[in-house]
Image (cartoon, rainbow, N blue to C red; front, top):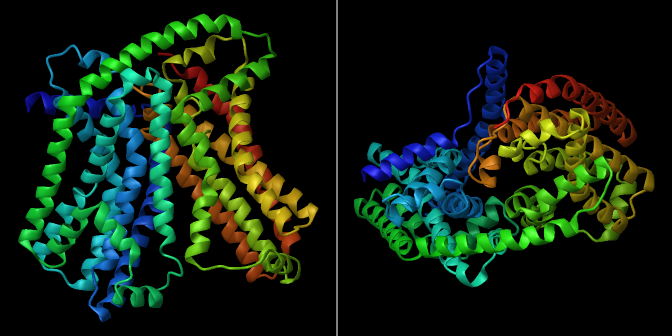
Length: 555
């Protein structure tokens, strides 16, 4: 146990970002943290708590008070699996500390157990906040006792254990085939495929909530037709024991909850002893084979290109060929329509293409303004989510010196990195807007407006993210996923992006519905604001941002 706790302590310290030393940077980080807390964390957490409180009060009429909290806990557990699989996979097998750990007199279960604990603690912060507010919402509607509150909080903290154990077991089983596959890239790609399979399963399960409103949902629960809850009880049986413990005040239920967590952890540790070192051995042999093969082909693929094309190609290849970057930065940019489909399905929005066309051209520009606001909002949010800008320098890691010593100006490198983010983000958004526009015959001039606003919105968030990342990039990381998930700049960029999206989209809606402005006037105002913002962030990038890069010390 002593070795285990020592490993956890070391891993936790390695994951932390360096604290700012200059007073101005401390102030900026504190301000960004304030924005992140009050514009991202608190609103989302409060929304979960309010939802659970309202639905608990409504379901109390049919004697099913716990269904609301069960629904939220099921969602959180599913999202835990989606986001934790790559984290666990990279922590176990692709972090740079593995080569130092394996020669030490440590058991496989000690290494995997310590890495699992580290991943659990880093992933559990935001999730526990959501669970806690959901429990508060339920408790206020259900009038829980003090013991029930304590049980709920302890159980809520442990909620991600089983979903993350599932991810750990999947990674152990998958990596046991490394001796057969003999390819690190193939193995990483397989982990990405598994992640998307889980994501698709999540989307399909969300589709079972079609026509969701309080009345329909209460009726379906009363009739025992709650498909989503039934699925969650099968996949995550520990949620039922937890609810039995704090909603029913059952000590036996809490013991069952602890017992099933301990059982799954034991299964995971036993499999670690059996499979972990076997997987690592196969991975190391695959690494040697690939390095020799890659070196032989390297010179054959070398071609002369212009500086701009070569640098742009280098950035693109790094994003596409690295499975972690591809899944977290590129692929995620193109799958947002899946979640939009879920929203449409849940809200039971059924319109033909002809009806949508008539609404767009005849409905007093309401639909056109909604479309305008949607395009701007999704462009801002998705560019922030893919983190292409806010990790532009952190992704370089130990190769950061490459930026400083190649004969290419900082300004040109900065703009090419920005161009990569803008191109990917714009394509991932406008391609769907274009398809939708053609399908319902949106006027060409409107489609051009949408395109310009998409490019400008993506550019604003890209340059702002790069400016944030240049202040304090995370250059010390053990694997590519750490550069993304353990980088506070991504979180800060998302917070400010939500604030910008709220001002632009909320302002546009108010101008239309309160001041009576039409599509063209609102588009002109948003266009003017976005042009001013991108000019501001571009100038700041070319001045302060480049100064930040120059002042950074290479590793």
